[in-house]
Length: 305
Image 1 (cartoon, one colour):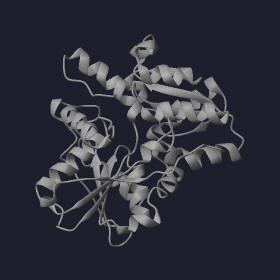
Image 2 (tube, helix red, strand yellow):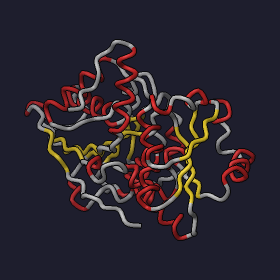
Image 3 (cartoon, rainbow, N blue to C red):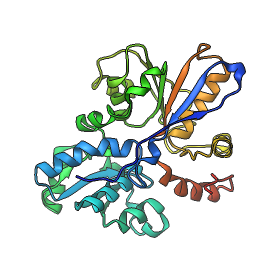
Image 4 (cartoon, rainbow, N blue to C red):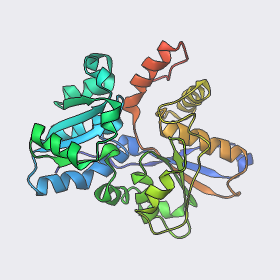
């Protein structure tokens, strides 16, 4: 398996001196143009395993603007796998060309099967998976969002030796795989803070299955109403952040995390002298889709140039 990757760098984000803390962002979004951030980390060992076991086809699941769907399609095309995406929402079947994510995946040769939301809820059942094997033949199964033991192994490589200097490591949370890997490779002196994009505290249980350390915490105040939800305050923050630091943030994950970190800094959550590292998990391909939704609601859009 051969990806052309760039190393991620830690970019300093200057904050007013009165707060007394230092903030850096790990630019995982820059390691690959399409399979960036945590998506590369999650796929790395899964793709190696698929290749080792002789699979020719990858099958996975996702919604209309899924970063995971886009990444699997791109990685499959680059490495010579056939790819199949089981897409939540049968109403999307005749709207591929209206959806930037699905259009990108289609251009990278991904085949789709669109299912209703009710059917999609059964995606992990034996009967559903057996039906997919009858329809598509043998395939290597990658879960929705990519999270499994091999994904977590990949995410354990996000932190490097130089990152031991940080007191806090922050990352956005979707399915819990990325933060699990970060927790596992964190140092005893570090606290890992997760910023869920979804409502509710159910992720704590999911994450606990993969980790043994206790030096982590979920910050549940910055989901903005739940997955794929946003508002003018968040869009304004993302646009100002890009103007200030020349870094684009996605509105589903990293944008919410940085909004939360900045708010917590202002509230004095972090002790003076703290060094904070925020992980940029990519996801920038989803901006175009979110902007389309914002335009329909006559709301400000995220600036991309």
